[in-house]
Length: 444
Image 1 (cartoon, helix red, strand yellow):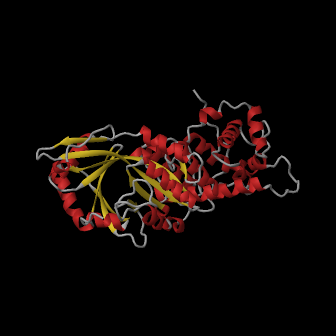
Image 2 (cartoon, helix red, strand yellow):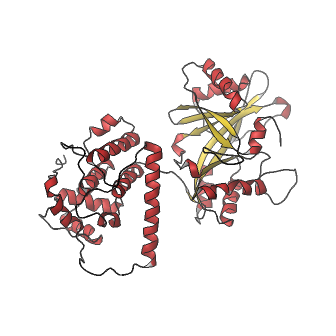
């Protein structure tokens, strides 16, 4: 059994910080950093901003520049509760941050790091570190460690493993002021990394400009299959039979990208070559974005007058009472998180020019371009009409049907009539004009 953590009293903070952040080359004049270092620091600043934005959007966490013990403890409890699917009360009971008489007091950097190490499930790894390994890890980050110094061995082990695993960056740690209090920058970095270590941070294949993005995308498509959601799907099938809805799709929440909605567009299709060409188009236009592949199954009525359907692993049909069929087609959503809202706004003109069919035979379009392409945003965009998503979630499954705003109350009431225990969520979102026209019954 691991020994109980031995915390240093707050009165030792000043002495502790001397051991913690005293540079190995103290007093030496700082040389101009090489370009590679500057680039790495710029990337770190960007990542820091991403963490801060994510914590605010997902958990409502916003921290002051000077973080108190109570603020950090509460924020960590929120993160742990969300990532481990427990209540905040249960998360607080884990005692990652020891309580003090005054929660409004500041929290030392080493305490915040130790708490984050435990919350990230790195404690056992940390306590494998010998004193020599601790000293080497800290020295590589420009930090001197003395055996039997103000910094306890266990605290030093936590800091060493945090540095080695990237839970905290050496530059952030070195920048802490002489009093050693946890800064907002350090707190945001630690919380963001805890989320990341538990797999609840942004989830994506890669970026548009990555050389290997095409292979990753093709592989993701080949590994996906038609998604079946059991009884939940049967309810929507009944809705199709009753003409309550014209179609629906099923997704797996495990593939949710957790992107910033202000900078994200989600694009749906059924042909993987189209997706690869779309990414190539964005790359050729100098646009970069994070890319997530989200497997999706679309269900819709297949009319008997269309002829006998051809079935495959990726396209299945089930005949219903009136002779028609319900078709289940393997499709996908591509979610793009752009670098800025301005980059996001560049997406639609490219799609309308190169990925929307306006006549039967035409060159200059991406392969398998649709008459009514489907892409949407959770935040407002100019020239995008507003529609409603009617959603039911159960476990990992998400079953949703898009409708015109005025049709949504009827859809919700109809689904609840089929099963009064259903929790039907609705929200408005912004969709491209061609798909909006499709919902109005237009074929082109």
